[in-house]
Structure formats: C-alpha cells, structure tokens
Length: 61
Image 1 (tube, rainbow, N blue to C red):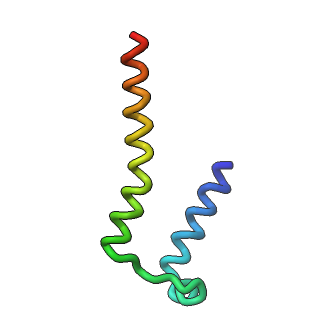
Image 2 (image 1 turned 30 degrees about the horizontal axis):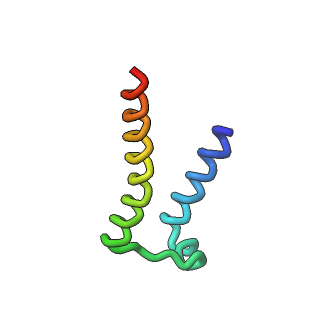
Image 3 (image 1 turned 60 degrees about the vertical axis):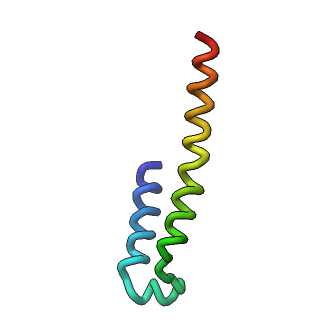
C-alpha cells in the first residue's frame, strides 16, 4: 500500500513537472480564489467534526 501511495503521488508530481504531460492533461494553474475555496472546502469539515467531538466529549465528563 505504501508503494502505491508513493507511486501515485510521484505520478501526480511528474505530471506537474513535465511540460508534455501538462499539455496532454490540459493542466492549468488555479487562481487564488480557487485555492481559498478548495482549502476551505477541505478544512471546514475537519474543523466541524473535531469541534463536535470535543463538545460531545465535554458532555460525557
């Protein structure tokens, strides 16, 4: 499993570094707005779930 994970990350990084692969996959850069939106979408559920766990744990004490 570790080999598969390292291999998939390596292939993704390779697609960013090799210009021919970038053009083949039609990769473009993302704007700052898109970066903020993606980051917020990734971290908001994490923050929500961790806060909920702490509140539930506080009630059980």
